[in-house]
Length: 356
Image: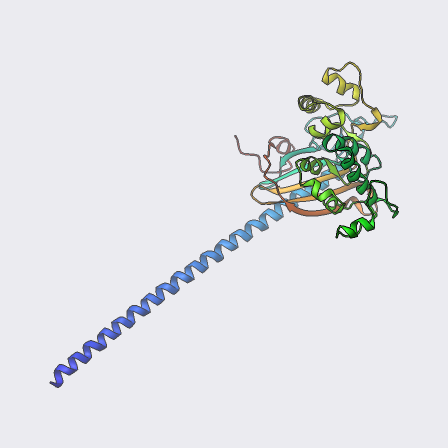
């Protein structure tokens, strides 16, 4: 009797030990799985961080190289040269500078190039944009806006911008000053020049306008430059179409023509279009880059873009360039056509584009 009871007790204890062992094994397996998952997440996060660091270093290295080139190389009608040159080769004994293309220039018209490790960049001569701070900017804007909106809407948008950047508090007929901003629940106008293009959102009526179908045109073709004339060799086809009163096909023809040989006069523009006489005002256009550049950089897979506006200040107090602003903004999903050969030929960056 006692022996039978002891066997049953031993069996129960064995079952309990087995169950406990199984629970411990299951718990250990669960903990191991959780720990494995944690380690995998940490590894993935570390890899992602490492990739972001690499992208940041590559982006900054690309930007520094471009700043150096802008400060040490000359520009021609075609863009930024890459090779160092003897001044005697392009400056005459009388002191005249020959700005003829030398070949292989980086175009300053927003063309997209490849930098280091998948970095993309573009450089835009600010002379190829409508200067929001320019004395003649409002006139150009009114001329284009009246073709996109009603005359009254165009006058109100331009008047609000003029009142925003002028130093006085006097309201224009179609403008807006402190009272109108307070009534609309907006921050008071600065009565000073725009610091960045994004500040245009703060001007009464502009934030809503930029969200319309016309918005992309103004975001792509305006800048904070004070330049009063437009560079035909660096303006976009859309801006050329608007300012020269030509259609999209003709604007495309001008882009192709200036890539072959940049324009030096409006007579050359007229010849490229097959027009007998130039119908444009010569003083409203230029053909040589201005001293302000809009530099954009981004990585192939990132969802942001770095925007930097700088002025070239040779022998300037602050150095060879002065950065107006630098910030990041969300990147759009536009198609990117990347120029393949120019940088590689100049031995600036080590990464050629992969073959098509």
